[in-house]
Amino acid sequence: MRDADITVRVSAAADPAAVRSARLGLLLRSLRDRGPRSRGRLAEETGLTRTVATGLVDELVELGLVSCEDADRRGAGRPGVQVRLVGGAVCGVGAEVNVDHLAVVAVDLAGSVIAEARRGIDGRNLPAEEVLAELADLISDALAEARTAGTTVAAITVGVAGLVDTVTQRVTLAPNLGWRDIDVAEDVRRRLAATAGLVGPVPPVQVANEATVAATAELDAADADRADMVVLYGEVGLGGAIVSGGRVAMGRHGWAGEIGHLSVDPRGRLCGCGRTGCWETVVGLRALLESATDPDDPIRDPALTLEERLATLVERARLADGRTLAALDEVGTWLGTGAAILVNTLNPGTVVLSGYYAVLGEWLRPAVEARLAADVLAPRAGGTRVSISAYGPTAAVRGGALVSLETVLSDPTVLADLPELHGGTR
Ligand SMILES: [Zn+2]
Image (cartoon, rainbow, N blue to C red; front, side, top):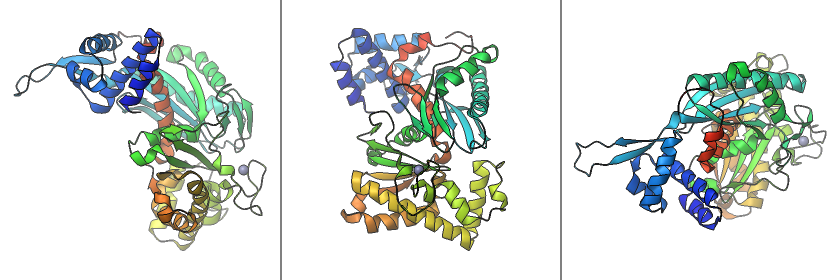
């Protein structure tokens, strides 16, 4: 989000406390995005008076989020005190529940990864309670690492491959996991509280759709074409998110972006949702593996992690294995066929190949581009680029961590109310 947007929102707000919080967030975001500066320059660049900026910087110092240090006086320029982000003061935790894996990452304000873990699971055959117990276990380890690092956890955001109701915060339906109406946030909170002796008080827990939070990570790439983009998050199925004007479209209940269940082949395969011919039945990782390998291929061993599976596929593609290349071309072509429907509808600046697609992007992208060139009405595929995510399968956890940090960036004063896991001074 640009500073100007926040300035507009600040001036429109009437509540003085809300104005103060928003201005603190504006300064914090500016220091994170543009590095250390003098109070004077910070005031100038954020459109605040020097007096107001100085008072707010003092508050941020009090919260432990920034520090003020003497600049190098040896230089020819004017000496002065530099205001600097204390990046490690606070972190956000992102977690992901997918059909074949769980993942957790803790990222601090400066973008450094403090803790990271992944675990392969057989989510289709495990009861939800067991999956959530394993997830809480991974999160608990990440909280312990944050405590060791002396970092306060802003929040925990759990991304789930399914429909998440934004109001009730319940997972309404996750077809590939076989979940219906589950309060994931409350369940995780309860499990973490049971281990409170190990990790201390439990930070706020929220739940979101995994592709929606992945889009937050993709938005972070600061690319103008990404203000209007379609994110294709490849996993066992296909998650999606639509970003318009720099914001992720949520829809009425938060269920927007379920592009994996667009019907592309009415005579096609049965989908995990019970319908026939959904897009994910031809572009999900399951479809790729079925096309590229035999049932007894070691790559299908459920004990393998996603990374191991993808590494084997990459190796085979690099060795120009005919069956692997044909399967990638088939998935890429179906991916482009569905993407063209979205490009005709939305005219995005970019279609981002995220999740597992990013790892195999060099083989998938040509087929996607060919379909867009053929199937999009607007000239030159509407100017839409096809780009490959830098985060790949970690986009959802990374995005979850960013969403968690957003609670502090939009109102740094919440930090004063957060449980301190490290019990130290701030
Ligand atoms: Zn479906």
